[in-house]
Length: 68
Image 1 (cartoon, rainbow, N blue to C red):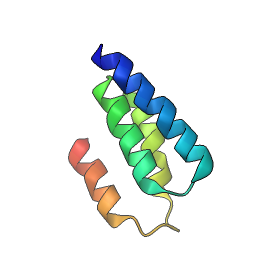
Image 2: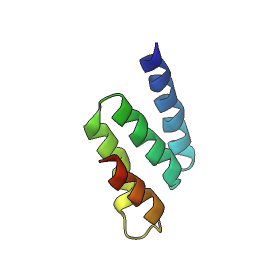
Image 3: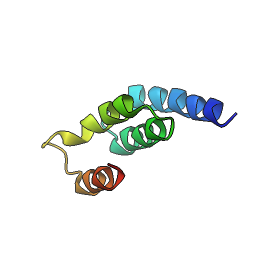
């Protein structure tokens, strides 16, 4: 049952990402959910958004470092 809720959350976040593609919290949350589901590759892909030097996302980068 819990996995179903995680899948639903990903669907909602995908919709949000389409509306607000530059909102870092969406990508961080998606990465955390994928990590919780054991989908490390998808988690890292979600976090790739944060690797762009054009974003002032130090706090999110530090979160990633703590996760991995």
